[in-house]
Length: 257
Image (tube, rainbow, N blue to C red):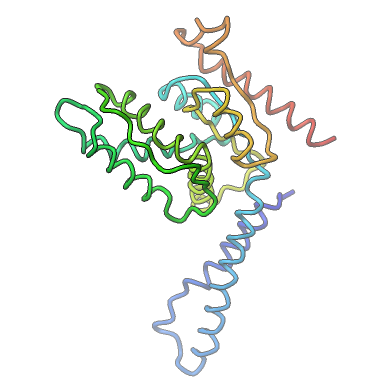
């Protein structure tokens, strides 16, 4: 039996066929009627996409994972072998860092030029996002050495979070996941959203509450527990994956009750 998301996707595909229909060679005698149908389909398509965006969050499970990018990618692939769709949440801080790094001085000091570029990149990231909250004006940090990309990301994150809290990142993730799912026509029962760039308990709590609110959150803390050694062994991803699948099954059981 199809879920609501699958039914909406089916209607979207039907509407899109008519909305994008090429009328170049259409008989001129019946073309006005067909043009009207095309315009109606385009309007219907917008409505269906809004319905899709409203329904999508019901399939989301947020997973806060303490691991590195390589292991996260391996986990996504492992979950796919188990027929579980997973996506790594895009980070607004990564988006900004990639744009700021070329503006750094040769000695990789975060100076006024890098700070200005951070503000510009933040404005670019915020385009099309309506629900972020500016807590206070940007504050330029003192000149800092950022020898690695991670060092730069940490400085960028400090600047952005001081001004926006976690609202901008949550809305950025929300916007990009909706666009990705709509373009790929995702219609599964569950979509696992892996969030890996959360460093503090405060940030985790803020993201859990503001990103897809009311949807379940799972925190995988293997890297911080007695199982830390697993991250250096070949079975690390499988262990994390199986733990996560167990948690998802528990969520499914609760949902059925």
